[in-house]
Image: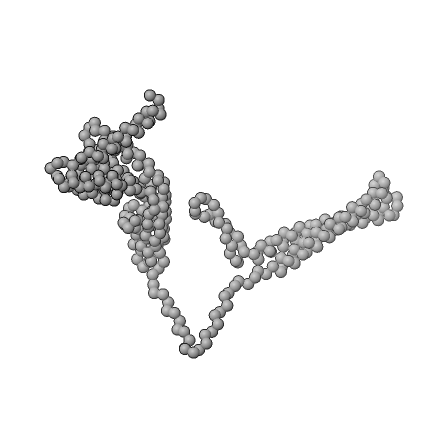
Length: 325
């Protein structure tokens, strides 16, 4: 038989085994109440009333700890999304059947499948939390020994509460997916205390004073930046103009001094002007570059400071925020 057929046959076998395991009477005949509760649970399961079905199976188990009833309870808990509870019931039921009972193997297989769906959640308290701080998850206290330790939980949303003496309860929720491993650090709420009394209003008939104008930070002073940038601009223009004139003088000197030997006064004068203008051009460009750099620095110094820091969210990244100096 090829692998695809073997897989299909195994699926059919598990479906038949589940049906026979859940439908067969499992309570002993000498406990009529347990048997009645079990059958009530089966009827509720047929119409998918899982809350009622699970309650009936639990009541039956309290009177008669039959492994078949526990297997039904495991299936019921799985259907209503209580993966962790279903996993535990499947594992226990698998150990209660007699050797060779196919329902034991079925329970082991279901437990192995659900174990991959259980989430792992690690809850930590912030290091600065005061003494006596405690955590509740889904209305139940988290033992101090369980803080900082991965704990298996049902996938889905979980309500978290942090309590501490003299602090407001900090409440929130966290959603974990099937098979997901999550860590969360919780902080305590703000300190409790009476709110300050509101100031007494003016006597009746007295016109109230106009509300104060909101404060705004003064605009940044960029005067120095403008001056330095202006100087740099003048330097760049001067360097460019002097460079063009220097090229013209150099060309004239080249014409009047063939083979770099000046025979006429015009050539000598042109060569001198070319050297002078070349020096002016170099100094002008240097002053322009320094002015541009200095002006940019002064401009940024008067602007909001940009800071980058890591963010926590759906993925790694950086946040950019501005602060005024």
